[in-house]
Length: 199
Image (cartoon, rainbow, N blue to C red):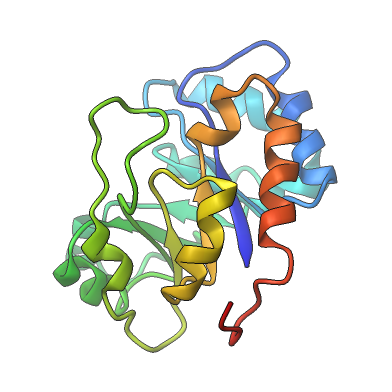
């Protein structure tokens, strides 16, 4: 199972060093999401992340930066993707979904799509999970379906059983104060969960 990490919404001291450590430990996909940041602030963070890790990064919000850095792609709202001709020269396209209808729609426009919230959020109080989303049939095709919402190591096998090939972790990674160890815990839980398996 592929593990993705979503950044904290705020910046913190030593963030680039932590992200570089996560990449060095095997992180294959980082969603750089700083919804309240300026483009300049996000640019400065990217400049302090090792350039050989840039191709593993999806940028949220500040899409123009995808032309400045050799990143994997961009994350866009589904409604924007559905109303726009195919995005050119932005790399892989990611979006978020929250209903069965959105999941079906995302299969036609996105390379990667989050399905959330699957469980009660770790980081957002009173953000409740929707158990039905775990069981929604994923459309066939090339879209990578990513489990999101309340993802912890002890839930990875469950989401894998529901047909997810990837999971994104945010609250669990950042709230414990030891992101490198928290990520290692997720890696250990995901080990052996491969496509086609039925754990």
